[in-house]
Structures are given as C-alpha cells and as structure tokens.
Image 1 (cartoon, rainbow, N blue to C red):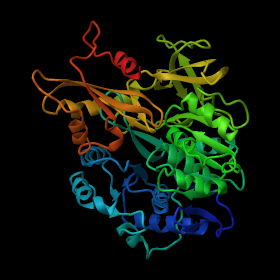
Image 2 (image 1 turned 180 degrees about the horizontal axis):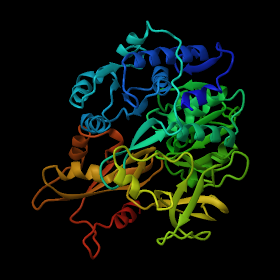
Image 3 (image 1 turned 120 degrees about the vertical axis):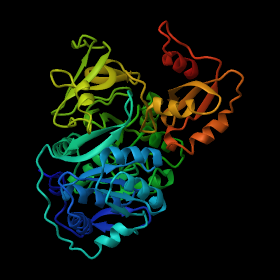
Image 4 (image 1 turned 30 degrees about the vertical axis):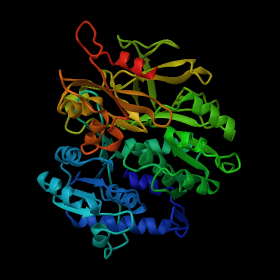
Length: 507
C-alpha cells in the first residue's frame, strides 16, 4: 500500500481542524494539507516522469516542504531529502549518483544548484522558499486540488536517504513504502499516541528523525503539529504548554535544562519527551528527571532501518539504555563468530524486520557486505543486553549501545565520516597527515576534532584551517577544535590508533 494511504487513514474527518500551526501564527487545516499535496502531486504527474523517478529536495523547513514530501510519495515517486548545509561538491555527488528527474532548491541557491543539476542530467529544477514563495508553488497553484493516490507495492521505493558510511563515499539507503508504513504503525501504538496529542516539532525534515519518526507519528495519528523552523529554546518554551509530545536530539534537552524558564509548570501538559539520533548523556537523563519529574524516553534507529529499539512508554526507562526491540523487530548481539552473546557480553548488533531497508542505491556489493548469510543487517554498532547502564541496572532484555565498531561520529544528530574531513585537511598546504575523531560534548553528544601533523618546516594555524574548511564543507562536519601535533600514535602495523587519541583528548 502507498505510504500516503497508510498515513491518510489517521487524518481526522473534520477537515477544518488544525494540522499545522507555525511559529509565526499561520494555521493549516487538514483540508489545506490534502489540497496542497494534491496540487503538488498533479504538478509532478504533469511532468510525465518515469516510474521510480527521484525528486531531490534541498530546502529550508516549511509546511510546504512537508507537503512536497507527501505529494512525492502520493504521486508514486521517490523522495530524496538533502541536508540544507550541503555545499556544491556534496550536492554534485548526490545528484550524479541518484540522477533525480526533479530537483527543488532554495531561490538563493538556484544559480549553482541548477548548474550542478544540469550537469547531472536533471530535467526539472524548481525553487521553494520558507516564506511560501518559489516556482514550485507558482507552477502548482492553478492545478486541481483533487488527486487519486497512485497505488504502490510494499517493496516499491518511497525514499532514498544518503547516509555517511565508514568505508568510502556516502551511500543511498533505499526505503520502501512498507519499511516506512510499518514503522509508523508500530510506533503509534508503542509510544501511546492518542486523540488530542499535539506534537512540538523543531527537528529538521531532511532525515529520519524529523520526517519519518516525528512527522509520520503526528500524521498517522491525525495530530496537530506545532511547526518550528529550527531549535529555538524560547520558541519551545512558548509552545510547550499547548503540546503533549516532543522529539529531539540530546542538544534540545541540554539547552532546555540550561534555561531557567524550563520548569515542571511549563512542561505540565507534556506526556512524552523522546530523544534520539545521538547518545543521551546519563547526566542529562538524570537531571531532566529531577527537574521535570519524568524521564526522557531514549530510542535507537538508523537511516537504513528507521526505529529499531525503544525504552517503553509504560514501564521502566533506563538511562544509558535504548530499551526493548520494537514489536516485529528482531535484534541480536553476536560475537566475532556470529554466535549470540550472553547478558552483559559486548558484541555486534544485528537486526531484522519489516522496517529494514531494501539495500544501498546502485551498490549491490556493498549491500551484500552489510547483511549476514541468514539475512540480518549489520548495524555497525556495538552493544550488550542488560548490565550496568550508568543510569541504573538495565533489565536483561534491554539493549545498551556501547559504541560503534567503526569511526563514525554523530554530532548533534548528524553523521560525520572522518575520512571525508581528513581528505580536505590533508589537501591543505603544509599538512602531512590528519586524524579526525569524535570526543564527548555536552551539547552535541560528540564534537568533531582534528589532530594534524604538519610537514617538516611548515607552520600551521588552527583557526585558519577551520576558516578554510567552512568554505568547503557543511558546518556540522567542521572540527570544533584542531590540534597541531608532531606525530600520530600508531600500532605495529602502522595504523593510526584513534582510540588512543580519543582517550587522550577526552581526558
């Protein structure tokens, strides 16, 4: 079934009811949402795109951006969200790899995006801005506000999400209508969504958390969303008394706790705070519980799998644990011989279920590598069942994430691949080599840090290096700190020992 049809079943019968309220006082009814997605679906259909055509979108967050996503899947095409921080070199790779038929960008980026899109063979380029302007809306304005949703099979692609890997270039995770629809249905029940819930939405909508977990949750439940363009503590506090559910990365909760206006009274209407996309520090978990009187619900998922594991809505929530496998999802922790680990034994986390992606776009060999012979997806994360979870004793059926078997850094909920940053640093004049690591950070979960060795006789300036990187890559990838050293620690085989660097600079 088409994912839009799955979500639509939850839309309220009262089409005048509010579906979205923006930070600046605009109201969109459920009737507005349906009409807008129909117009945009009709626009896409009028382009006579081939089946499975990709629609790549790099725009600022707005209700219209959400409607474009819904219209894309409603019309039977594949949605490709792109981080708004990506620069031209990054966008060029994504467009050349995905070969989208349509690209939608912000007006301010049209000149360079259209050039990159043209080179990649994209036929249609539209603009969409957060103030409800752009050629996309202009082109759709005169079209019908009725549209018959295109039927879709369970294994038809609904979206492609590019995820930073640890063995090379970014990979496009292919998510089907069934992957996304089944996960939305499971989470609706598992997190106790109910009539009258209001979602406080401050997450970006170019990745799993904001789009497929938060927005899907409200849509399938027919719940109003208070739509904030970005993390703004003052706006969160302003709208929290009218809300019941909030999802955020750990940064959200750190900043709320730092604000004296965040009190039990302000949060008295909130029934659920959910955290994900990065590890939640136990200190934050405990402080939040003390201040607000309810524990944050931490969960675990990936771009390739949507949500996998969650602390229960009703039941014990343990700081330092991501909780129980969701209904229908199988999780196992295995040793190097792929044999199940006992309770409190650390091993590799593997998963199975209807939410597991269909593979990596145009990378059949990489897809095969990431699955076991018996069909389990290797998450690349390391964990254990039960044991001491810092926030308390975790029950034996609760999963605790220990770390990652690879060097992926998650900063503020965004994936950062060290090798990519190292390649830019190593190309700088006077640089001999570099090592990029993640170190604990109270706000971002992990901060990106670069340790750099200069060439003989060269003098490097850390601030100048950071300034140069700001012109080349997305802001979330830029090291918060650059340390100049004489050499890097290596093992007997000559491999850089990043674990030693992490221990040294964490200390």
